Length: 195
Image (cartoon, rainbow, N blue to C red; front, side, top):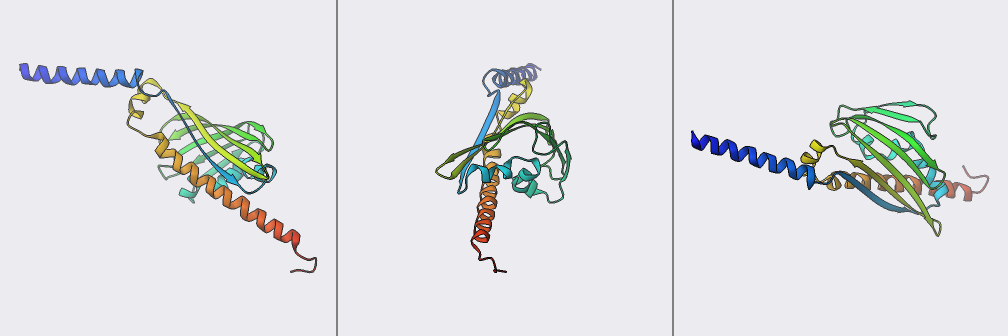
């Protein structure tokens, strides 16, 4: 009987220690960002990031589920526009993204509300910085954890989970912009009688 009490007491004690670590030691939030440089001016890149539909065309999560269902509200490309999505792919889940601020040719800010696979809210920003005709694109996301969630997130590397997906999305964006820009430029150089 004493051995059982000792084991239970030890388990409770360890549980309390882990819980306290989660509350007082674990990170209370996250910030993940990735960047790429696109060989095009900011005014060329901006249309690819300034609307929710445009973002979906290079989003790594949209690519994971070709059957994702998107519902758009408001005027896309303006503050207050919303994209709600649902997917049967667990990694994609369900939620909504709302445009909260736009600075033409400079940045777009959105608020994300995730419903599945777990509930969470985050703020995302895409920033454009033009230097010598090229554009540095930075995509970042920031969020916070509740007290209990912090405990579980001690064992999850959010940077490793989200960072590579952001990089994939940015590489797709880079390809889209640079290929379209090449096509447009070559068409501009075609003689008037070209087919």
